[in-house]
Image 1 (cartoon, rainbow, N blue to C red):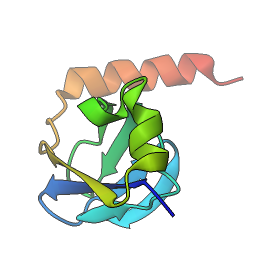
Image 2 (cartoon, helix red, strand yellow):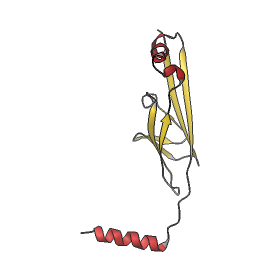
Image 3 (cartoon, rainbow, N blue to C red):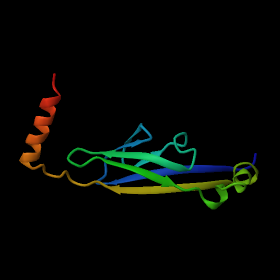
Image 4 (cartoon, one colour):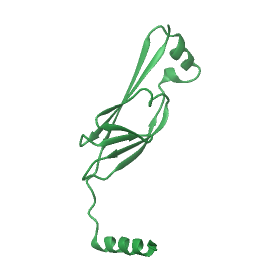
Length: 118
C-alpha cells in the first residue's frame, strides 16, 4: 500500500481554553487538534474563537499546500510514495479583552433597537 499524507492542524489560543469552531464545527477548548476528517484539503478555513470576558475572534485562515501537494506531484505523494508524509500545522491566536462601551453608544444602540420593535 503506497503513499499517504497525514494532515494535522492544531489551534492554540492566548489565553488558553477558548472554544474553537472551524468551518462551523465546534471542536472544543483550545489547544485543540482539528480531526483529519475536517482537515482534508488546503485552502481557507473559517476559524472562530470564543471565550468569556474576551472579544470573539473570527479569522479566515489560509492554509497553503506544501510543494509535494501541488499538481502533478500530489498524485505521487498521495498514491505512490511508499511511506507516510506528515503535514502538521500549528496556528496560534491572541484574544483581546472586551472594549468598554461609552454610555452614549449604549443609549444609541438601545434607541435603535427600540425603533425596530413592533
